[in-house]
Amino acid sequence: MQHCQHHQQCQQEAITVAEKYCATHNLRFTPLRRRVLELIWTSHEPVKAYDILDAISDTDTSSKPPTVYRTLDFLQQYGLVHKLNSQNAYIGCAHPNKHQQCYFLICTACSEVSECCYQSIDTLIQKVAKKNNFTQQHTVLEIQGLCESCQNEKA
Amino acid sequence: MQHCQHHQQCQQEAITVAEKYCATHNLRFTPLRRRVLELIWTSHEPVKAYDILDAISDTDTSSKPPTVYRTLDFLQQYGLVHKLNSQNAYIGCAHPNKHQQCYFLICTACSEVSECCYQSIDTLIQKVAKKNNFTQQHTVLEIQGLCESCQNEKA
DNA sequence: TACGTTATGTTATACTATAACATAACGTAT
DNA sequence: ATACGTTATGTTATAGTATAACATAACGTA
Ligand SMILES: [Zn+2]
Ligand SMILES: [Zn+2]
Ligand SMILES: [Zn+2]
Ligand SMILES: [Zn+2]
Image (tube, rainbow over all chains, first blue to last red; front, side, top):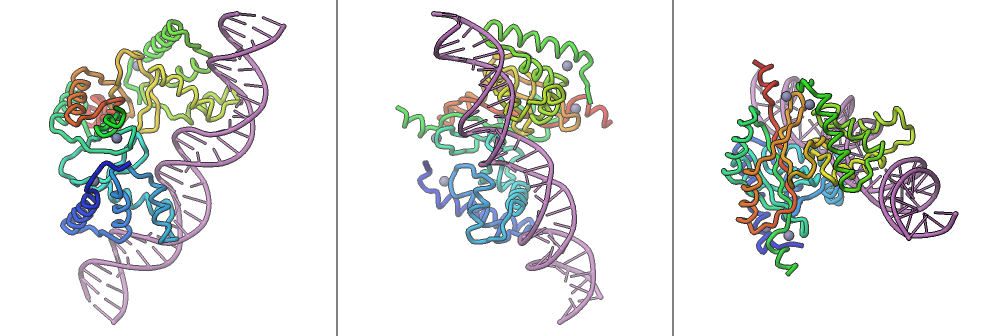
């Protein structure tokens, strides 16, 4: 199920952003990395590593699991992709390294994922950490539920 | 590394709580379920499914992966155990079903995990969900960083 | 005791991810 | 242009996580 009405644009913009990000930071945006990122941006649904492998195997028979996982590692390292731990799946990020942490809304009906990165969440988590004398390094926040479209479809 | 100074008590209390919870709710707290819960409460570190399997295999040669995963499913279903998605590991819960969601602080140095379940987090997440017209069902919040003891040890 | 339900045993397999070592492509300095 | 160090990719093997499907056993009740 695809709710986004202008998704080709989402995808293209994401690739352009990645291209520029890599150029600026002296990183190699190789054909493989581009291909994987395009695949991940096929929709707003998270993508499984082995589905990526299947897809790229169509044109590149030398692809093996490490091919995919290394590429995902690269993309994650620079915030172009995030892993959704509750799904063992990967989702593109539209604003690489704009802020430290990304938070997600995950629809259990259509599988679409959107980011919900608010300063208020960062602030509260900092506060909770401080209260527990805990030094925060990285935070996973994945809110599962029903997106607007899927609620309406139920009605 | 074990920072808790009174942990045998933590473990015993957790088992007692589970015992009572099951009695009250007409659930069978079988020897297997008790054993697995005890193993999980060996420390405040999350435990891997296959480590549980190894442990129970010592005394019960018929144990196989489904033995463990089914038991974990049961314990999770009633809030006696939570899965930490970022670690593929399982941690005991001291207050089964006291509230809907549990949130965690995970020390990347000593691996100890503590819960940080605050109403203020629930409230903010509700607010974020509402803002996005999203109906929340279940939320994963795992804050990774350094616990107090481990920060001090670095100094 | 018979019977339905829940729990566990058993075998097989699916899914997710990394280790370790080899080759190729790239960037830069001579 | 060539040599060389670095980064990326190829390749083989294996480790780690989880579930499907069906069989038997234990439990609770009529
Ligand atoms: Zn889109
Ligand atoms: Zn949806
Ligand atoms: Zn303790
Ligand atoms: Zn610690």
